[in-house]
Length: 375
Image 1 (cartoon, rainbow, N blue to C red):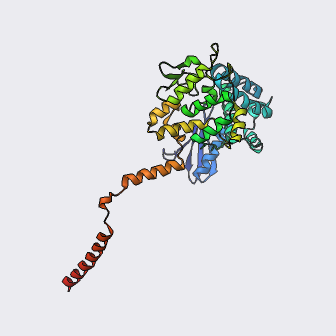
Image 2: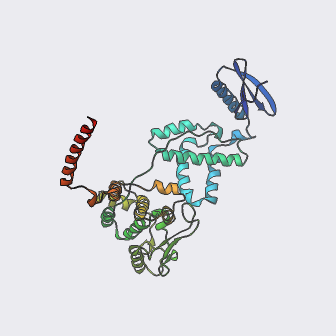
Image 3: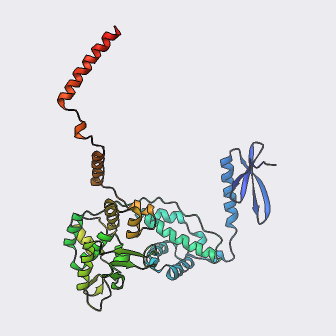
């Protein structure tokens, strides 16, 4: 009988050594099964057991699982996002459009996810895009399992994403961009630069009911932000922001609820205007999201604590805040300058040229004395 040390857990079974050959044990519908792996190495025996368990689990399907199609999965996940995460519905529909092109009407159990990932890679789909698409599909499978349509969720291809951006705006960049932007878009762009709030989901959708010019706050209500947390930004403490909102209030029609608008009508997006303006300003490649990194950097540069910066900009965790804390060349130079000031030797402590000469002379004389004493 195998000892506890000889048993190595592997899923719902384990491998153990019998003589020089590893055997494995697992359960099939309550029946204990022991078979020889034919392997003399533990790693190979575990791989054998893993394959056995995978084959076994393939047969554990709910009745009717073979009739479940991609279309059924799509229906489940769309209803889920529509009812629970409406703000993510547009991105989900976009991901499903690509998935549908490959998997329409195919059986859920037959979807070749690895082949899909390879084809999307050949098409030039970025890693982050493929991750989002497969995440939507995984959610669909999870819903099918929850609804007793399928027994398990298939393994998803592993995709490495390295898309951390490092863009930020200097004040001169902002000024150059504002000159090229249409007048209605200059105020929301400046607002984003000053606050670090998200352009599309938070700034362009801002209503006057969220702005308190007397109390000196602009607020985002809970469940209206990306992380669902409420947020507020003091405006009296930042004169440029206070002035911007007062001027925006003056140019807003009485019956308009939107803070930023085109002639009283809500600005739904500014992608084309942004792209054209950034190209004319020699800032091609810059994104509105770069204002978030800029705001974090400016706050930390100004001595604001990380906790306060996190609350103002709206990061869920300190780790995410620090991911946005871009350190530029001037930041590094300023840091070294501070080091120089902190470690500088007072002028009074630096010996003059004459003192250095006297010291050299005295050192030589001391050496002669020491030599005489030794003799």
